[in-house]
Image (tube, rainbow over all chains, first blue to last red; front, side):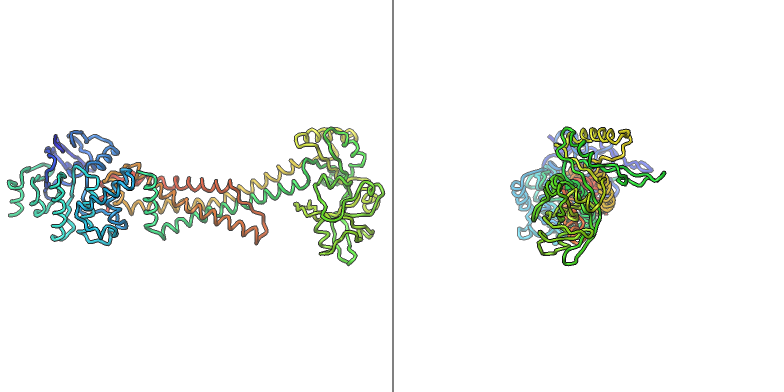
Length: 237
Length: 403
């Protein structure tokens, strides 16, 4: 069974004018893949990520996550799927600045309604899996550097043991050195079996992916293994 | 989401901006404290009145003569001379009547041997007045039937009068002059309290006959007190008394030349006034509570806007709309709850202060505390609802993008 299957997904924003953010996107993802979705700004990659992350629903087309069609679910049902199956890593980290590292990672579990003890176990596991140094566990998020914060965010994405990790420009706010560390953390997770989709416009991030999906004007212009992807070469040149 | 987590998250959010939360809570504290203090004044007044009406003696009816007329001018209730001693005998025959006490009352000068003097109400009555008005004796004794028959010049002093005239001294056995006539003090009444000119502590009691023959030199009664067996039969007694007295006075029972007032009448009239008084005070104080509530709404709206991104994140990681709604509501209810607890305490202190320094009776009842708590919760929910709805309805994508 495919983890993700998108069939002819469109997304139209209706303001004064209709904007077609996605014009029929179809692709599928196997479990354990590492994909970079690339494209210039306005190509629809953010919209696609929102739909893949069940933050939004497509205007038309179908989206199957683990074989279940999720494109027409209610807000609450989508929240349930996000909670159980998807981990997000955002460009802006989006941590609770005053809360400790531990509490930030714990946050998704609070909405699960897990008892304290069980939560603590899971948080520790996630922090260790993202190689977050133990001496900083009880630092407040706003006391940490950007790279550290992003690793907290990764641990938070990981804490529910999700099938799918979605990272939206995870290195966008970091210098290349800390970006590398963050990226390596993500790659590590992929190696341990988490399906990883990174949305980026940065070439060097995309290079690590095993498969490249390139978007332009709301359509997939290329979907190929990294070695064969022309898009990367185009950008390189 | 577990309840304890909901609570923890709310406390965490409130403590994010302690000054702002504190000031917002202050609004509620002032509101609740003033409601509690104001209602305590109203209820204090009410209980004082009930107490003093009851101090007039339970299960009693008071008969007053009707108003005299000078041409077309009504001279006021009690001004006519229509009640006589014979009336007492008629009233005693009514079923369920325990005691009937004739009273002649005059305001006269009373002088102690040491020269101290005062002007006060002198009550001439039969000895039953002490049991009917539930007056107990602190020192000495009351006068008896024999002394009434003998027109004895003896007096029982109210507590305040005894203190005014004799101070620390024991007045029993001493002689006082009332209207220039010597009276022997045989007793001092125990302090009782009372209200509005009905204070037993300010009265002097003398035998009925002595008052009639020696002091007032008048046959007419000012008041007749009737004590019934129990409260339930008072209306019947009142009806009977009206009919019998009207017959005796040869007047139409529908337009009698006397008035019968029951304690219930006085009580219900006065409690009605104090209830209006309490509601008025409470309503004025509620305005500050309303302002406090608007403060809560204002703070919650600001806080929701400030935390748009955080709310977006919470939704992205799986919080349902309802959970966000509950979280924001929990915050506003918690704010009002804290405000309520402190406000109740403060209001209680204020009411104690009023009682101590302004000498106004106050009473903080469980009812007003419970009311304050439920009003607080209601305010939290009411004024938190809109901000909470606003937060719950945020689209996670929009919220995450918010700068």
